[in-house]
Length: 288
Image 1 (cartoon, rainbow, N blue to C red):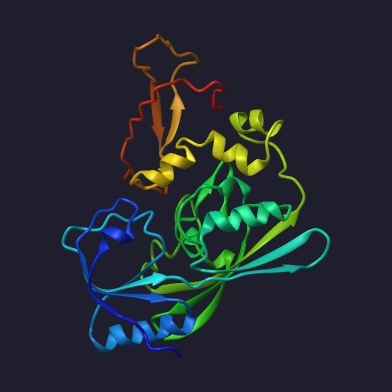
Image 2: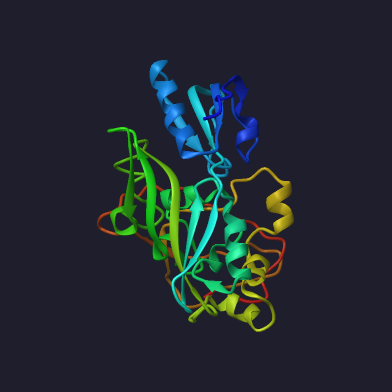
């Protein structure tokens, strides 16, 4: 095993898409599952807290920084196993760039995660948030995860059904936050075209362009904006909204007032920020 290159007093601004943050006491790249174990052992020896991150697209660091060891997940891997003419399994390293995974899978004629294009971050981060878009969620295709369990110091394989998935949440974000370090995951995809029903605005594009381009062209932020600006990429968690009336009054250069009722499930606490978004244009295709 190569010697770890643990850096000291590293600015965290370069490890968040927002470009903000103080200093990490220590920082290290991890490229193998063995380096995950070694890094955690080093931190334990020095009595330091640890956190493992991907591309920093869902993080805003405090100006105070992080007092422990920040582990940057760079565990790569993209392996394809074709079970038969229809079923294909992808084994992904947790540090594999997610949008690259989507692009490669679609180029191979696979369906199951095409709607998750342009979601920033790494493959290993997708189960934590149970990322989703346009009717797809990672929980629908995830079969197993390999994780390092910091409680007993062993690697485990967890089935997708054991991950406690919910709307933009999982056991890794809730009850077991900080316990597991994801090193790889397996997705079950299928050969063929995406199956309807689709979002109305996406369906309008499907007649002319490939599925990934449809998602990207229909996205709330353009590719150039997402790459060029400091941003968090996406608003993950939304309350359920219901229109109180059948019609809206729309006037040029006037704000659109949308009367809504906010509905929360019985098992969910209201803990959301209301987001107001301003556009310089009105979309040509209305969302359903």
